[in-house]
Image (cartoon, rainbow, N blue to C red; front, side, top):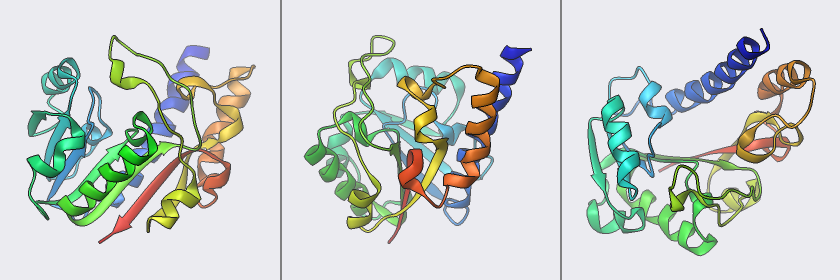
Length: 211
């Protein structure tokens, strides 16, 4: 029973994020998924658009390809996307849980390259503040090297929204920190709506920039 409830609340949280992403891609015909990993949220979208995924870690690309999450893939260092893609070649460029894996200046340069490639819109999601994370599934690129806050992204021209509920409820890998899990899981799910317009209180930040 507890396991089923956990699964339900996890699905509710993910679905909220998926719908937020979908809403910002509804007028797009193509999207470049930077640092797509093995299980990109874009794979859950029902929108009819061309999706291209890029990542440096080949096993993640192969897993994503087996799931059929994107239409096309490239294995490259995503810091080199400015060389691999021409300007204004995709309607949207997204980096979902990516910028925190780079040192701050590297991530800023990556965002600038994303803005150059996009015609319409940039979408970024990242933890709110620094969240420690080490290697996962033998992928050394999963280590977190920086933390981001609302004001930093706002200063770069992004509108910011809160995702994944209250920040204090979640810990490493976004897991609920407290027991009983049912109570805190319910609160986390409900607070998804409460923190959407108050990202300073949220576990994660969803940032959007129209070009």
